[in-house]
Image 1 (cartoon, rainbow, N blue to C red):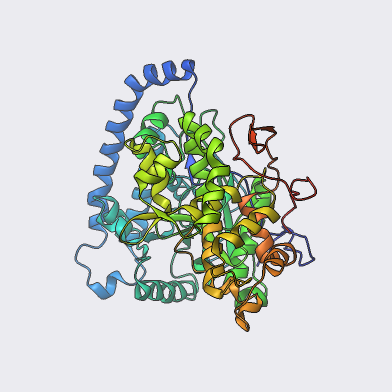
Image 2 (image 1 turned 30 degrees about the horizontal axis):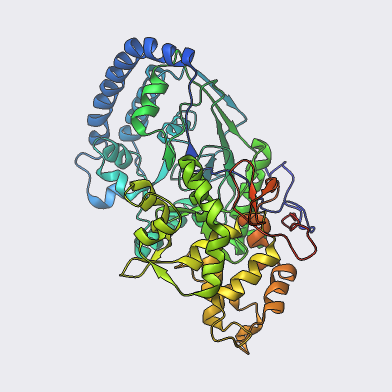
Length: 534
C-alpha cells in the first residue's frame, strides 16, 4: 500500500500550529470591472440560456436512468452493492452523461493530476476546499464513487433520485441517531474488502471562499482507514464558482459561470495518507493532520473555523466564538454610516464615565441611540444595537456595549480595558469579582451574552475561592494562554496596527481615519503591544 510521501506533522513546539487568518472564509463577494460587466452581459444573453437548456435536458435524461437502477429490487437488495447490468451499463451511461453535463456548463478545461488509488488502498476520498455545488465535477474523474450527503438533499427534485442511484450515505446533522447510523454504515462499507465503491467526502462540511481550509469534521476519519486527499482548484480570472454563507447567491453563481467562454478546473490526487496508531485512536487528530497536509499543498492556512448550527465559529483557546467579533461588525456598520461612527467616537469618554457611575444601567434601543447620537428610527441603528439586547424586555446593558467596543480598539491598552471592565462588573465595592461577575465580564468583553465560559473559568482560582481581584484579572490575560489569545488571536489579531490618534478637546484621543474608538494609554503612556499568537 502506498503511504503518504508528504511530510507528516511534526510534534515540536511551534511547528504546524493551526493558524488564525484575518478575513472570513465564509464570505465571497464578486466585484466586476466595467469591462467584465459588459462581457458577462453580452456572453450571458447567448450562452446562459443555451447552457441552462442543455443542463436541464441532461438532468431530465439522468432522472429516469436513476429510477431504473432500483426498479423491481427489494429494500434488502437496495441496501447491498449493485451488480450486473444495473452496475456496468447504467453506471457507464450515467458517467458519460455527467461528463456531457459539465461540458455543456462550460467546464472545457479540466486537468487531472496524480493517480486515484483503488478502494483496497484508500476506501475514502477526502476532497477540499469545498467551494460550491459545482464541486461535484470531481465525481467525473473519480468514476461516480459513492458520496456522503445531507438528508435535506434527498428532497431536491432529481437530485434526490441521483443520490439514491449513487447509493449515497445520508446523514441528518440535527439527529444524533442519524449520525450514529451514518458511522456504522461507513464502517460496514470500508470493511467490505472492495465490494463497495470508494466513498467521497467533503470533510469541511460546508462551502468556503478557498482562502483557508476550515476545520475538518472527524466523521470521515472515525473508522481509522487510509484516505486519499483530493484537491480542487479553479484557476480562472473571474472566481464565479464559490457559493458561501454570505456573498453571491446560487442564481448569480450559475449566471456568472455559465456566461463565461469556458471554466477551468484542476483536480489533484495526493498520495494516500495512512494513519498512525495514534491517529486511529484519535479521529480529531487524524482529521487535523490531513487538513494541514492539504493546506500545505494548497498554500493556505489550516484554521479552526467551522459551522455550528447556522453560525460560522472559530475555536480560540477553550472557546468557540463567532468568526468575526461582534464588536468588529458593529464598528464596520458604524463606519458605513459615517456620522454615526464619529458620534460614537465623540461620546465614548462620556459613555465610559456613565458606565462607571451606573454600571448596571439598562436602556431601550431608542434611549441608547439617543445617547450615541444615532437616528433611532433608522433600521440600520436597530441592526447595530440589537446584538447587545438581552432578555424578554429587549433592553441593552450600556456597559456591555461599551466594553465590547473598547476590547477591539487598540488605542485603548489591554490593561486599561480590563481595569474598566473590573469597575463595570465588580458590584458592592468588595474589591474582587465573583464567579458570576467574571462570567458576565468575559461575555461582555467578547460581545457574546449567551456564551458558556465555564470551561475557561476552570483555569482560574475561582474554582476554589470564587474571588478575583483586579491584579489577578490582569495577570490572567498576561500569563494564561487561553486568556491572552482572546486579545492576541481574536479581538486584536496579529498584524493589525492601532490607528493614529489626534486629541479631542477633552484630552481623549480619537482615530484620524475614523476607524478606532476613543481611548487611553497605560499609565506610562505606552499603548498595549501586539503579541504573536503562540
